[in-house]
Length: 558
Image (cartoon, rainbow, N blue to C red; front, top):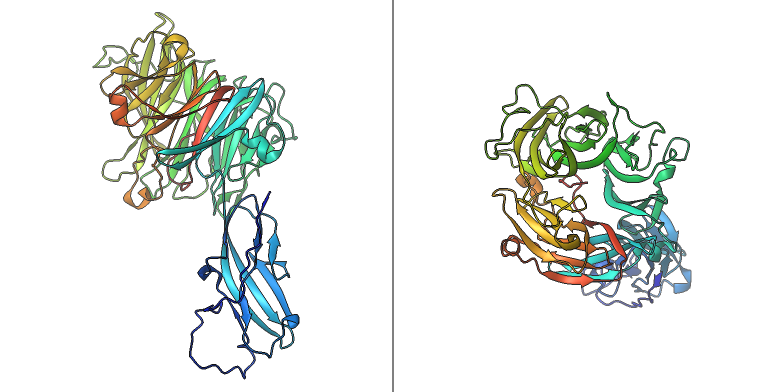
C-alpha cells in the first residue's frame, strides 16, 4: 500500500462554514455560543485531497479555526463519518483504502464543554488504477500471466504492467490459460469483473482493483465442478449465466434478484449439464446483447455451435424495460422460419451457391463465428445481430462465409433471415489455426490472419469482398482485441456509450510481444495499420480483452 504524507492545513483564512459560505460581515459578535469555530468546506481548499486511488491509505488533516477565547482546544473532540458510519475520532483521519466509487463524508469538531458541534460535509472519490485499457492473458513458461496496458488518451498508450494479478494478490494466477472475459452484474452501481478461464482453476477478479474474488470451479452445487470440467467460455446477463467446458458441456445457473438487480455470485451452477433435444456438444459460442425497440428493453443472446449434430443453437434471457429476466437460459435450435424470404437450399444471388441450413449444416463445419449489430430504421436502436460464420467444406476443404440476421423484439417474436453465402477469399497460409475477428460496429470489416505461420493480419471488406494485408507481426499472431466500437443507439443513450478507442486493436503473438495498431478506415484502406506502440516479455499471448467504463445498458459483446 502506498502511504501518503500528511496534508497540513492550519488556520485557513477566508474559510467557509460547513453548511454554506462563511459571510464576512465586517463586525463580529461572539457573545452567543455556537459561533466559536469555523470549519473549512473541504472542496474549496486545494491542499485537502479528496480523490484517492483504490490501494492508498487515506490521510486527511482538516482545517478549522477557533475564533473566540471561549473555547479551548483541549476541550475539543472530533468525529469522522464515512457513508453513515463513524470511522475515526482523531483530529487527523487515517483509514485503510476504501472501495472504488464516491463516498459521502462528514467531519465534525465537537465543543465538548458547551455541547456544540461544527461540521463540514465532503465527498471522497476513490479511483481505479485499471480504469481503461487492454488486459492481456498469456502463457509464460507454463504459468498463466495477466498483464495490463492502460490508455492515457485515445492516441497514447501507457506502460505495460506485467503480472498485474500477482502484483495485487501476491500469488500466482494459475496455469493453462484459455480466455479472459469481462462480465457485469447490473445494479446501482454496476459491478464489473474479469473472469480468467484456465485449466488449473478459473477465477473471478474485481475489475477495479484486480483483487481475486473467487474460484469459478467452486461455484457449483456442492462446491466443486464436475469431473473433467475446464472453463473455456461463458455468457452472462441479468437473470443468470452459462459456462462452457472444453468437453463441450454447458452448465447453467440462476441469480438471486434483489430490488430487480442480480446479486453477484448468488447462484450456483448445476452439476448436471444442460440438455436439449438430440443432445449437444458445444465447440464454439458467441454472445452479445442487443436492444429491443419496446421500452429499450434488451435481449442477451448467445449463438452456440453444436458439433455433435452440426447445427446452431441459441440461448437468450429476455429483458423488458430494464427488468431482470425471469426466463434466462432458453435454449433452442436456430431454424429459418417457414415464412422467410430466403430458405436453406435457395441460391445466393451473388455467389450462386446454395444456402446451408443452420439447423443442420450438412457438408460444412463451423470454424469461427462473429457478429455485427445494426439499428432499427428511424429509431437508431440496436435490434438486429448479423452473424458472420466461417464455414469449412468437408467436400472441397475450402472456406466459406455464411451470414444471417437474428432479431428479437420479444420473448416470442424472433426473426431469422439468411443474408449471404459465398466463398471466403483464398489466402496463402490461411488454415484452421487462423484467427477470425468480426468488427462488431464501425467499419464493415473482418480481420483474419494468414501468411507464413499466420503472422500476417488481413482485412476483409464485407461489402465488396476484397481482402488486403494490413500488418505483419514478428511471429505468429495468437490474439486480437479491438477497442470499443461505434454503437448505433437512440440519441438519448449515445452519450452513455464510450467509443473513443474504436480505431485501435491490440495484437498478441506466440513469442510474447504485443502491438497496439491503428485500424482506422484510412489505415485499413491504405493496407497499413501502423503500430502505435509495442510491448514484449509476455510469454505466448493467449487472449486479450478491452475495458472502458460504460453504462451497462449500452451494447457490449462477450
